[in-house]
Length: 316
Length: 91
Image (tube, rainbow over all chains, first blue to last red; front, side, top):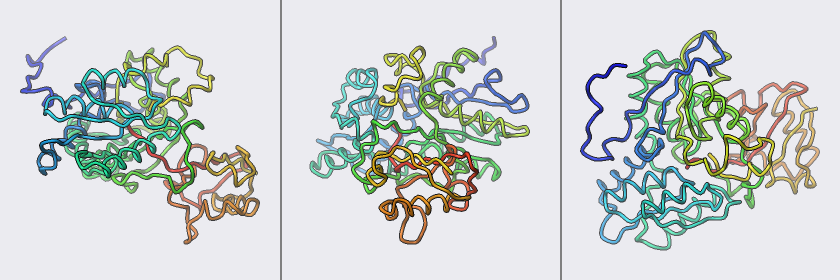
């Protein structure tokens, strides 16, 4: 082992966001002529890629003068964004309320409690849609609430355009394909745009969770939702991945490469494997949004994958 | 015939079935056959301009047809279509 003598020093935890490792996973990669690398966003201070987004959004609200006196930051989040905002709001001195579906894993609630954020539950069967709708209603009813709004805030993709993508390009200029999960669309839109400028031939692929029956409680299609910031023109292909497939990939990742990642990372790797299989040769980068810590209570490394109750959980 | 999976929000239009069958050699043909069998699906699935409704996603063997050839995407005999409402994801 060698060291350049620096572990990197920062003036605050917020400054320590980003600079995440890019790691080759040759044992996991199904095509020996393709190099598959994963960007470990779980190494961020609160354990997910959302630290980057939360920082940009809070700094943006502060710079615009929208946070003042009795302001309360309010955000719909099933976990990672809320936790990232909670750390940053604690350091910056803003109270935070997170609206979250009632079926998220225990650890996510615990982390928000630890950081002192208030939690409002939205109905589990309405999924993230329900959390977004409730938060937007609360903000409309009470002017103290200020919403960063990760689904509509252009600073979300900008965080990835200005930080995530340049790190990937610096570490892997030969990149041919990029794979990430689709949630708000911020990662795919921001990283995708920057990678296209780097090389117009880079292919961008999205992994999307197959929603369980339990979280499809829409009253009508008009309750549907397409995030405002997602730019579909950046994406070359979008694939549905089931929770069972995601968890199977996650287990193989841990056993073959020693990497302990969250459930959405398994879905991203299912898609990255498909992309790698279809390539003659080249380099694929997959973004793993978080580590496995916040999913331990759901036993995803040992439970029966055929069990239907898994689809009722909010694991992505 | 192609198997088409119906999301909970659209099941009342197909007599409560979770999965139905429809015929066609492209995604568009399968969708139109589906609407011929279950006319109430028509305005739910398609926009006034004949394209897919904005809040409807259609997947052929798990891949979103909006990133393939949309309604022109070829469908083979044993392929499976999944219809899903566009929903918020992310954390």
